[in-house]
Length: 182
Image (cartoon, rainbow, N blue to C red; front, side):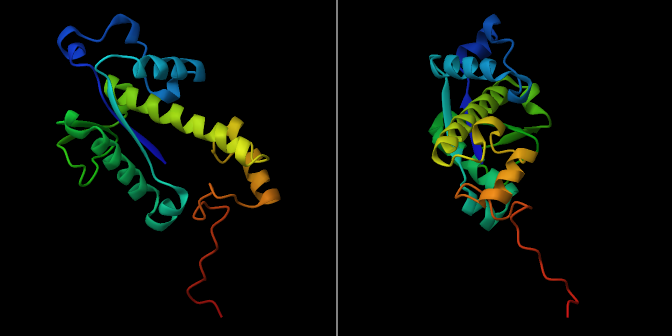
């Protein structure tokens, strides 16, 4: 689980978002090339601040995906230091975020700052999946980026899980005993 938090350049608030940034959108609405281009440009933009945090598979298994998401979001905000005085959050509010927040459903398509954070998180995750593909060949991480595609499920059945796999992921999860099992 990877989360990102960003602070856009202050002059964007005063002057408006520059024309060349108007196509910045929800990372799922952008091609891989567009995401990579925005990522590189964001990282080179003066006044752009960012924090990227992750929660590993074992921790997700321990606390669940929602709590792990919130944990990574809180850490990403902390990495901004004092730069963030108010957070726009994609979706629902995050408990104990550490700063005042406004939750925006579908925020990554409504807010440039949420869209920028979405791009940073997605590109970082995709880069990590490419590295995982080199480290654990056979799972197809480079092509499906960790989503439960048919090819990924077939690889899991053939190879078993690697350290990246959540044991709480349905195909790997041990069945719960039935309440009245004899």
